[in-house]
Every structure is written in C-alpha cells, then in structure tokens.
Length: 366
Image (cartoon, rainbow, N blue to C red; front, side, top):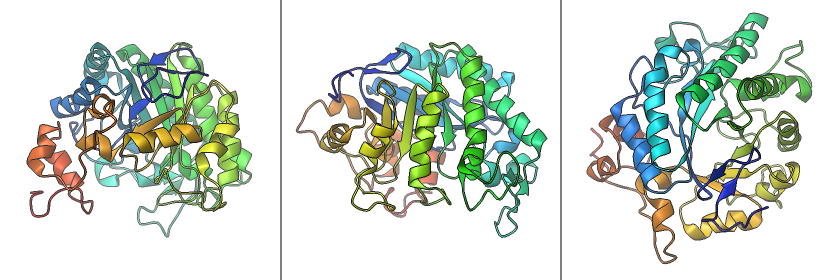
C-alpha cells in the first residue's frame, strides 16, 4: 500500500485518489431547508472545509426516505427534486479539489415523527423506547433497500464521488445489527448473519447500481456504545470482511474515542483489529476525538489509512493545510459564536452546538 504519510494521497479500492488522508467526518448541522434541499449555509460550511484542504468532504447524514428523517434542517437525498441543490454542492466541492461524498441513512427508530408525520419503524417493535417504533414489514425492507440504491444513483448523477452508508450510531442499519434491538425471527433477525443482512443487501444494491469508479463505503460502530446498543466487537470484525466481499471501497469505523482500547478486549486497540479484518487495498478510516497532527499520525502508525475529523474540523476549517506545520496547534473549545460564524457555521448550527457542554462559550448561544 501507499505510504502512511498523513499528507500523502489516499487511494481507495477502486483506484480513486484523495489528495491526503484527512477527511471531514459527516456531522449533523441542521442547516438545510425543511424539505431537505441544500441551503447556502450548508454549502458554505462544506466549501470552507474543501478550501481548507480536506482530502475527503462528506455531507451530514442524508435521509433516503421521507420517513427516515432524523432531525430538522437535514439534507435530503430521497427524491429527484433535490438534485439541483445536490448538483450545486457536488460541483462546488469538485472545483475545490476534494473527494466528495454523501452519507446516506435512514433513522429507523430514531426518525422524528414530528417531521415525518409517521410512526417510526425499526427491526422490531420496542414499546419501551420513547419513539415506540413498529416492526418493519417485508415491504419496508424492500422499500428501504431500493431507497439506498436510488440515493446512491442520485448522488452519482449529481456529480459526487461516492456515498457512505451509515451503519453506525444506532440508526436503522445499526438497529438491525443489534442483538438486543433486533428480535426478529425471519431472515433479518436471529443469527448475526441474518441481522447483518439488511446492511449487506443495501450495500450490494448500491454497489450494483453505480459505476465501479463511484466510491461505496460503510460506516460502523465497533461495539456497544452510546446509541449503538447490542453490538459485539467480534461480530463487527466479521462484518468488515463480509462488506469487503460485498464490494466496499473503504470502511469507516466511528470509534468515539480513537485512543481508547476496546471494551471487550481492554488490552487491545480497535485499529489493528479492524485493519487485520480488512483485505489489503480497502482503506480503513477512523474517527473519534482527533485534534492534533501527532494524534492523527499515531492512528496511521497503528494501521489506519486515514482519519476523519469532527469537532476539530468545526473549529479548524483549514486543519489539513495548517497541520503541515508540525508546530501548529489547533484551536480548541470553547469558542465564541462570532468565531464559529467566521468558520462557516450558521446561527442554527451554533445554537445546536450549544447543546453540547463546553463547545460554545457560555451565555452566547442565543
């Protein structure tokens, strides 16, 4: 494989190359319009990161069906009527030299009924869950697989370089993976092979519908954590190999904390485990509390092929360019709303970040 220099090009399985090994992680930002169309605010937020040198820029999670919307202001990819905005975004990112991706997802039990007007659905009925989702029917499953496929085709037509199926963070695909949330007794429940079936079928449907030159990747959570309930480390290591068989061009593992060992094996770090689970030639991207160049390089030394930045990219839109200076130190929170706006965040995004302790300077989020 190519050098693991952070600033060396990253080559994906299909041969497409990014200019470096630093990606903008997909992040909820509440900046698009109510119907899912692209806003100028969301466009500017992503443009500034592309201009700042990120090798890969990914959108927020974008719903593939109306009943999968998870939050207000979410960029949609569920209908051809959204193509003008998507095309505008893809064109702008291409002009700025980055590899552009849409993260495609369905909220499942985490879809917002106030926005969708429908009762959420998931692998199984969960009356104890505040959203009280109903169990997916076979028609729901067929419909959502087709929707992931169609969303990828839409992204390709818009001019994006690829898509990332969001199987992490406890959304629909992860809900089917869950040993505790998935209580089905059909082909989509029970054994891990069955629980992984929805994600694998959606991945294969996407892969078959777009050209080989179009990137197809998957993001997963490594084990039980936060909203990702009922996941097992060894099952997800097996899943990584299955997804490679299904044709992915990269795997993105959301570690939450990239420097922590696994819960299941406290003496082992997840990066070498997932790197060994994947064939050579399929890049491993990792995300989770990465702030400095030294931290990013330490993950490459462990076996990652690229890093995805979240909060550090919010505060440092030119992180890849600035980090070429080994003495550079990134800006850290808290940051004033004015400084955040200067970094391409809308008022709505600033207010959203104010929900998280320590990110925005107190008493300035209104």
